[in-house]
Image (cartoon, rainbow, N blue to C red; front, side, top):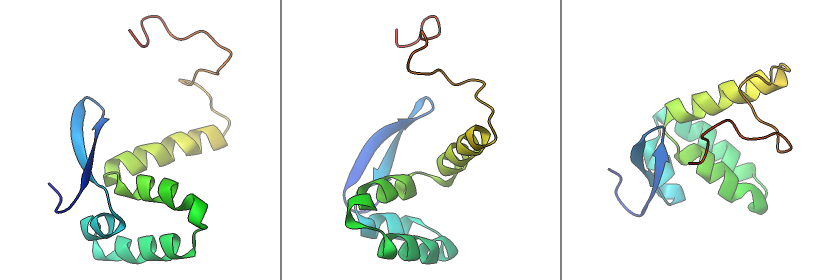
Length: 94
């Protein structure tokens, strides 16, 4: 649980409360990650702050999973991904 405002989302199959303020995000990070967060958020264009804050509010394991998927795509491996013009896998969204 976080002090201050929270956002509720699902990660995997569980509901998770995320910090909903920059101070809350910063307080939820380890000391070494706070410095990285401060640098990134401090140098960001104001239009990018919501996306950066959303990413940093996620638990580390969710950020690691996102980074692994991005690296897979950067490596040209599109297995497991569905393009916008492709039909959804059977049962998706039901």
